[in-house]
Length: 423
Ligand code: NAD
Image 1: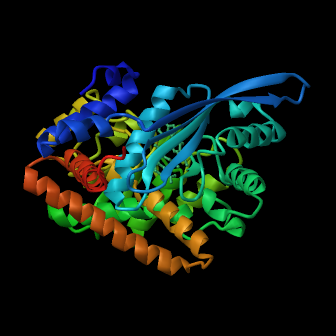
Image 2 (image 1 turned 135 degrees about the vertical axis):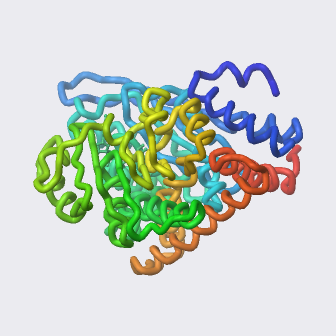
């Protein structure tokens, strides 16, 4: 390992620690180890935008292609004041491992622009998006690098990405970006995909650990896209969702919450949506959620929610990481030692990127699947990924997080070795 790869910021270092531990178990040769711990490309661009007040602002943007050995880069575009090159690099690396675990033919990439979208008008956001895409235009393409939404970016922004790229190449190119509106070549089933994947992984985990998901009790943190849909789909297969919390508090009902009603209650609120105040349930705090005597706990809100402050109180048999990075490394170690079965984010929420892959396939085909087709294929891919990680965890006597890294690194390393060294 070269010394300078240690110079990245702490998020990237955290990724490397997980990588190194898995690479040691795999007995990865030093050359491949070096390749897989260096980002392939990191591009920084300046994006001048004329603001509504007539002044010119210059925004800094990044696109990192961490590893594109398995296929085109895949990864979202984040708009946030705290975006940094280190963070974008780490997220691009995690996308590399997530795509490899999901067994889809994509490498890992990520983009970001340092900006505060909450203080920008729609026109300013459109101008920024178009200029950022124009600045990275040579880097992206359906066979090169395919962006998607991430924090503070949405379907509308993806539509502008698609239009800007299409204008540059002179023809309509839908496969340049995923997470588009349906009318522009988006995929049915994508909106529900991540939550559906979390449900599938929870169901398969219950089978492995030895309890029936039908009748099992579930607590969910977060009632946004991932939390609400995984809860709704788990309720549909007979699980009892006893608790849901969000930014503003939570609700508890030992007999099981009525999920469709709860989701309607949240969606009916115009701003600052929350489950708080839902009738027919007792109030519950986020702190209390983690101490409940449930079979399954699903953190599906933010990073660093399960820490050594609350992990000792967790009584769930299974933790499914719907969110990215919800468990700190020491808390994860603690849970594993206590025999809690933790399914890591790069497996548990990988159905989102798998559905993006389906969208890209349909766009390239120019032939669109029914929602049933998408869901059936998602079921197959998620079960395949879960079983590959589970078998690896049993083979190497490691936890599911380490096993997911081993599966991912082994797949990228194998293709790297087969392709050999150019020049
Ligand atoms: P979202 O914005 O739709 O929902 C987030 C939820 O978290 C909301 O219910 C919000 O109230 C809640 N929340 C915010 N702050 C909180 C706090 N302090 N305490 C408790 N709850 C809080 O987001 P989402 O799309 O559901 O994403 C959730 C997580 O899943 C994120 O980590 C995201 O990166 C990850 N993820 C999402 C997808 C996807 O397809 N949406 C895919 C992969 C990973």
